[in-house]
Image (tube, rainbow, N blue to C red; front, side, top):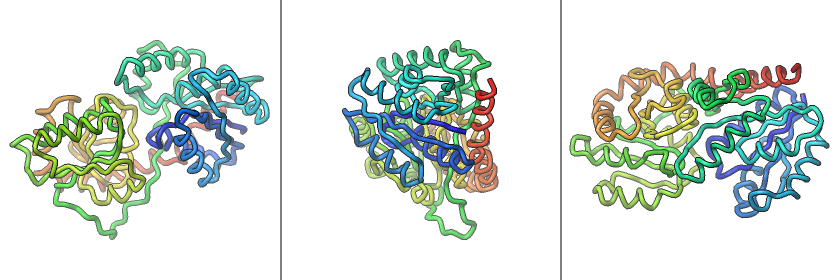
Length: 363
């Protein structure tokens, strides 16, 4: 089947990794696939790095240069590319890729979009999320990354008949039974993600500073974003700067997970975060907010702890409990890791997505 995926990438993170892992698995199923990268001229480095990673994986990739919010020349370039490729399905990721794909499609191609979740962390983002939902109503299919996000879309007026649940894929190496792990006796916590409001890292920092939480607990923060300076200052004002390491953006997440006793994710909103799937598939326990599709990847009390978002006191209690019971949670995480790897393998994602592509083709 001929397929074209369209994305306007940011720094390589959750959605970008889903596209890379997913399209690579689709190629393994012998689809004819092209990846069109909307190259934003205001920050072209994101698109260039993403395209380099895609090509390194053997994914045929082309650039569509884009100037500003609306670029009619880019629209013409995209329309020409879609005409040349003649895909059965155009699969967009993100509101900008979707808006250009809908405007540029020609012939009988269907347009699908993956809803990766919403952050709603500022007024402009909330506006674009409303735009995205309006565009979903014009799309032939909306792929949602979890059962929870599917129900949220339906509640917001997206016709249920148009939505399909396709959980995110994750591909990390199998955790070896003999590979040494640099465990810290339940003291090494790891946060992976963008440092922005919706991630709620300030909640975790305040809990970590509680006098009830063992001072042996330490936190590594892998990521960057608009809240980085403010949250670093907060850790200093709380007197825990010696217990928090700010690692910046990292590409060695498997190595960081090898050294972690638990992944922590105090988010206010999520779709189905890759950080949780990566930890769970690597047999690392998870302490996370009960939001989005997170409960679909965590067995509460067995592989991790789920907490109400924004509740500092709940995080204090959880950190104390974690320090006491971490061995049981680690055993549970190792027991369930294979199930997560099977359920969220890129091959499984490609199988489900292909079934929905064929459904569109028949329609």
